[in-house]
Length: 403
Length: 86
Image (cartoon, rainbow over all chains, first blue to last red; front, side, top):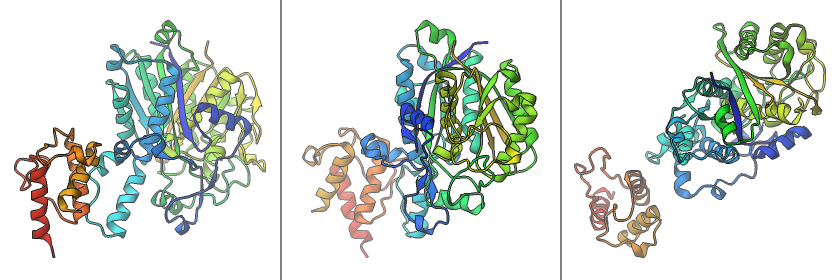
């Protein structure tokens, strides 16, 4: 089995364009959540989100590209350019044929769907742009990244709601570890902040109208975000041979299904995924210094997640740090695990643990060290990233400090 | 603007050329317009003239709409405009 390392990272999200800006915001505990701005927002009851402000697609893409790139594809391309650029990989030799792209997304081209449904249903138009299908399809982002970088290996998209990008990165990890691929481009992307996207979530009555406060006793729901995170996962030997900078090592992955309820989380399912990731990595619970929580800020998730961590980690649960960065960038749904993996890399590489901001009141059912409100310096050797999706699908990644 | 000039403007935009570079005897291939560019051009033409162009990308030769040159496209559109005028 090969060792798998991360040699490039890229992102765009409400905290910033690029990894340096995003990590700076996480260190400073900055909140990227604000008033939503899009058509018909006044018809929504929920009007806040982690929306990427000041982003002008035309500054990055030309008219022909924008005819084919939904916002979620744009986010993926921007992030992939940063990640691949940092990795220094060139795909001119045989590497391209064995390198692929695995992304997670939940809504795919939801803005494209929303705009065109509005056009035909509300405005009564009988003609739509010919590229609606290639623009909205869930695999568009992965395909455009493969086209831009000439990557001809296994390329596909994973859709498991809020766990999509963890599942995607877990599969990419397995493909590099098995030796099937020397490198994989992986992560997730989501752009659900449009009228229909938020209206649908509103219906579920789990959204907060004012803030995302994970683990806080007065938490009142989740806040949606948008954005992408993209990483280069690479065979350690290959990365070492070419002298690449290693950001972190991916050491384990596990996925489980609750097989119980379509929306309510299960402690057992989550705990099995955490335990499974540790077993897959061959590491002891005592080595884990930080967990990036799923931490949505809903009543149900946060207490279930804390109970799962307590079960899976045993006595070690009281020693480790666990934080949810969703209070800063919002819940980026199918892209969220990818954006959150950046917090794990920061903990391992920079020794800085991102805080859970918006934390106001302790909750006896979330009695772990949730790193409230301020980032903390700490030596972290192993970090986990949790994702527990609607549908009862759980995916946990384990990362180790480079070296 | 005449129908001809409006069609040429649409085709020129699709080909990222100046309208003066698009001549009546140009083919879409000459102008570098591929199959996706063609369906996008037809969409733009339908929007511009509020007509429906009978074109099936699976069998362009069988369609009742001749795309072999800019001239044939303009002629086809002029015919459709007169037929579909209400």
